[in-house]
Amino acid sequence: MLSELSIKNFAIIDDIKIKFTDGLTILSGETGAGKSLLIEAVNLLLGARASSKVIRTGCDSAILEAFFDIKENSYSAEIMKKNDYDPSEGLMIRRIISANDKHKIYINNKRSAISFLSAVTENLASISAQHSNQKLLKEANHLLILDKFAGLNELVEEMKTVFKELETEVFKLNELISLKNQRSEHLDFLKFQLKEITDINPLLNEDSKLEQEITILKNVENLYKMLSESIEALYLKEGSAVEKLAYAEKNIKNAAAIDDKLADDADKVTDIKYRIEDIISDLRNYTDKMSIDEKRLETAENRVYELLKLKKKYGGTIASVLKKKNDIKKELLSNENISETKKEAEKKISRIHKRLSEVALQLSDKREKAALQLSKLVEKELAFLKMEKCRFKTVVKPNLSNDNIEPYFKINGKTITETGLETAFFNISANPGEPLKPLASIASGGELSRVILALKAILSKTEDVATIIFDEVDAGIGGKVADLAGKKLSALSKFHRIICITHLPQIAKFADHHFKIVKKVENKRTKTEIISLNKEERINELAEMMGGAKITRATIDYAKDMLKKECLD
Image (cartoon, rainbow, N blue to C red):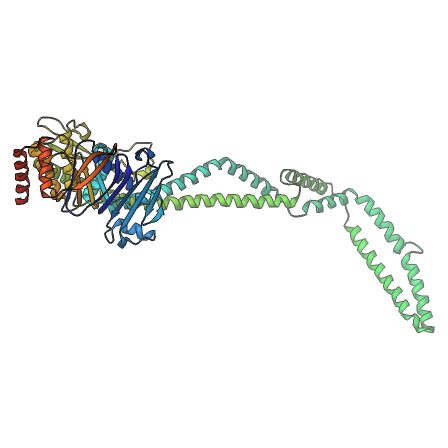
């Protein structure tokens, strides 16, 4: 709850301080005295955008301060704890608006940021003024009001969370589909390349072996001639190598019989003779198998040509061709994984969509029931405020689907958004015989003020806002209606700390605390002051609010009577 407010060097305000306590606090004063400046100051302390234009002429900066009592386990308390603040100490906000536009924010004497200020003050105070009333007229806000009335905040947050999860997964799926589609032609080309390599099925070093075989096949006659002559020289021809070795072997062995030192040399010659005989045997076997095979030569040459084509296309060597084959297989397998991932993504989306549908249908059911209840309660409140013939209807309209909406964001022919399957808007007929029209069509300021007050009165039991500030709640009303509005504000003050700026004595008389805002000139400078009124001063203020600058005995007596009756009530 807002407990203290301090404003310094702000427009025509020099330096004022005000303390607020429970109940209904009334702020009154002449037009232009600076009452609206208090609203503007509070807005800035709640996180509104600041401008150096608000600084009092001749000053370097404006200083705004507010102290809020923080309830244990409240939203603000949780935010403070998460950011290493102790909520039991309360919340002290100081905002310095500088002429150089380098503004500063301090929270509990620690430098802070505007984002944290906005977050921590989100549910601390609500300002019902001309600007905020215009927000009420916007249909985009009506669903929020209905959900707040129905106490659907947790379900709405769950809806947003699940919807964002669905949105994220659908985005991922679409990325996969796009990737798969983009790669379709590329994958066909890869499959063609793999088939080309697989059909030829090259083996490592196969090309060099084939080239050697081709060389042999082309030189069979020369090989046969050379080997035959070699066999003849080694064995068959008179005076061949084997014949001469046998002669040498015999002589050396005879010599070894005389000198055994030559025995090893004899054995060596024998070994050479046997080795040559083995060579001759190998050469004979080789030549026996030799033949001119033109068909095999043609086959080998064709195979080399096929391998050459592959090598030219895929890196220049058989090794590079085989590497390309392996890489293609990996890429195709990867694409198969995309297909599998796509299936898994679709299953996950289906599960999320089912959960989202359950939450959305729950919301729809509760909103339909709450809409009827809210409409009846608003009509009841408006009847109390002398709009007995007014009809008020909360319309819940489904989001119709179309072909452009992805199926994942459809339920039973309706489009689903992060807020659910429907929108809501308020329709009103202020007078009998008139059709229901959008709330924004209300032309009368008095009617709009009463609708605002009626909604605030209804939402007060569910709204988690400690302090509500009313400005212009008395616009366009007076007399008995103003009296009833005052009673309604007094009733609201049982649930919230209510601060109300008013020009009407019928409302001011209900104050638990009454402050007067006055404008005066000192040392040729205009300044605003705020004065806490005692009982006698309240009587004079009420009389002045009734009779203007000229206060008569009659207005004083009537003011006394107003306060007396209020006290008796």
